[in-house]
Image (cartoon, rainbow, N blue to C red; front, side, top):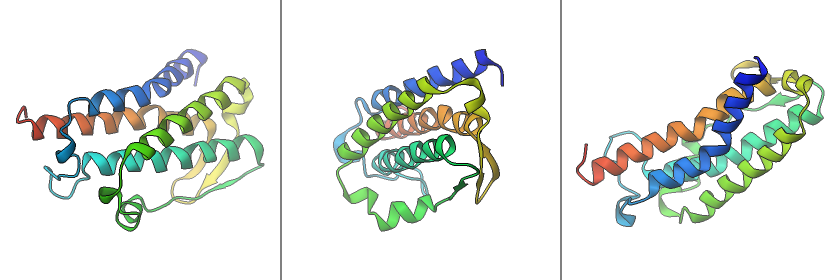
Length: 160
């Protein structure tokens, strides 16, 4: 990946939290737990997922930067949603965790040299996993979920 593309992805990563907050703007509080799309997460479940996922993701980057050939473990995000009762808990702390983990990730990124982006480990579900792979995944992750939240908000408000 060239430096310009990487810088673009870093800027996208940096905007992720703000995109989610914007998508939540105007979402009726009582509707945050609804499932307008059968089999899909509610807005609250998505926010909890982002809090947990981002916390895990920054740990993954930390491992890539500090260990030789780390093993990056996958996890069952749907089990997290059910067993950690995403839809019954206040999502405010999860949104805060997401924001703070992003800020830590950005601190790590600022310290990285060009060769750090090629540091690699092995992901238990997807194989070879580099810091560049990590950035490609997490630069888009929050934005994808922000779009989901916005679609849910529009459905709840009768705009979709």
